[in-house]
Length: 292
Image 1 (tube, rainbow, N blue to C red):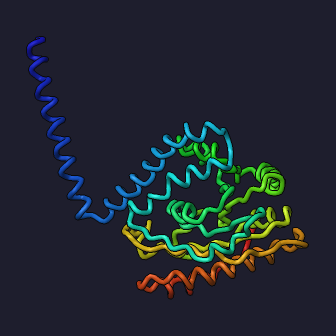
Image 2: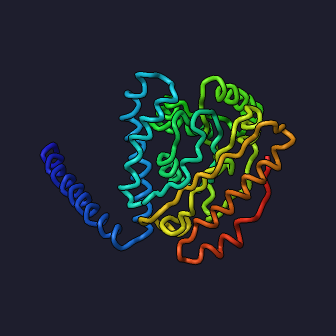
Image 3: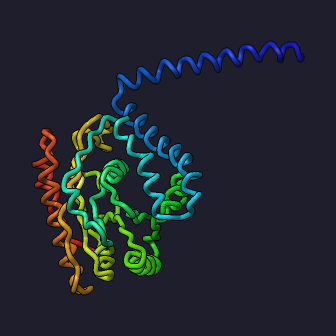
């Protein structure tokens, strides 16, 4: 009986080896023949590579503890990713960043690839405001916490308002800038969603400028719906700061509308991809007003 069982083992290992060889042959075939498979491979590597880099960053950041200066370490480790994917990021208007004061950055939100544009232009002592779920995203969540990323629970409005009040004080007392995506969620439609007003309430409460940043549409190289992810170009445009001195909470709706309108105008201007997206933007980009 034992002899028969021992004879089975070589057969099992042979089958496993053949399956492994078949998989190794199948992956290149899928890569070259299936755009959808290439999309999933690229996104899997993108997310996996970020988690791996976070593992490397954690011990370095832990030396300081939770500190906004650790964001420089994350930025340095993430800057190279655009080269891996053949994405050329062009930054214009960086001189608009106020040189020595707190401010609130507001930017459009298209996908997880926004990280590439953000790292390219991220100013010093600037941290994003992120949804609390990111805190539990393994090594990436811990690295973000060590870098001073501010987490809010959007489902608990009272907690979110409390956090924003604390952030307003931090802006002024610790010379910190924050990066907010006022759309509140990713928008894969090649346009810009209505803005939530939290970032604008924050800026008015702290009486600090708002710096709008617009990232051009990814439609020429990335589309989740079409499962397409190729190389391409992304333009990041930093707009002149919008002052909030003297404004009150009653001015926030008009302020949010005004900033969104200026960002949407620039978004349409820089999002020409040669595939008719300009017409699409005209049809879909102007819908909706700022909301809570």
